Image (tube, rainbow, N blue to C red; front, side, top):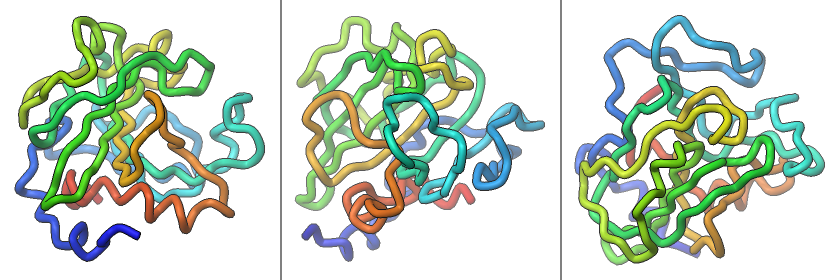
Length: 199
């Protein structure tokens, strides 16, 4: 088991924001409402939220509706930044309806603990010219929000997810079943450890 106390001691202000958010944004409640455009340009979809009737395409198989990342919704082309120095370990395209579309996963070392960060629902240009092993620098723009025809069919947004498990490919389970929840929350820590108290 990983040293969770180390993660609880992280100071989010040591990291760069992954998306520059305005002061005014909406925190969505997708446990009761469908995903509809908010009244603000940007909005947040919560971590560890049960989202019934949202993940219905065949890739989700069974009932997987507990969200283990954090969504930042905004305009197509919104830049996404590296939260700290690291390197790209995986990148590619997940083409199925409802999937991530274009993805980049970066690897970081925090006080001797390896951590991976998945940036999902990106534009195709986000992976152009990038290679596995490429270094990223804190604050560097590494990707952009993709349009629906490139991001798996979703409203433009970034799915940002942390992982203590090394991904096998350019994919991580972004939603899990109730049976998997306890282990998933241990494997995929709350992104607010990096992003700060967004809600």
